[in-house]
Image (tube, rainbow, N blue to C red; front, side, top):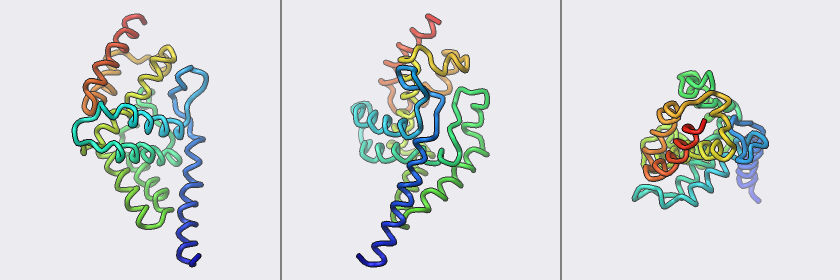
Length: 200
């Protein structure tokens, strides 16, 4: 193997080994059985499976393969920044300028471990997801929001109980984003969340 080829592999594995740290980042959301918090690596895998399974909910023209790639990459910045729960007391920090700046810095560092061609393509996908303007990114964001909703429903309330979330808060913080990329999916899920909040 050439020195150039060996150097490329060194960079690729530096990134892959760093990415392993995502498995140690705990989220507020639990597994569906409520037994423990999920980690961000599990969340990313589950979202890729969501995209594969719910591809028929995407708008015409959405490239689900690109969506899957976005979802595998989207939370790598949490290695440095951690998870900021959207319903927590500091949930406003979720979209704050400080959090966004910290995530940009983390993206620079983590994707910067890769060979330049991969660094550029991975970072472009991450940036596209964050901007949530392309049809692919809008659908990816919808799935990122619906997965914790389903986990909370399956675990008997989960973080909704922990953070005293109302049906109205769920709609404004999460529902509108799900509906933007997958309106029929949110209509179906909302029936279930409405039933939960009516009973609690």
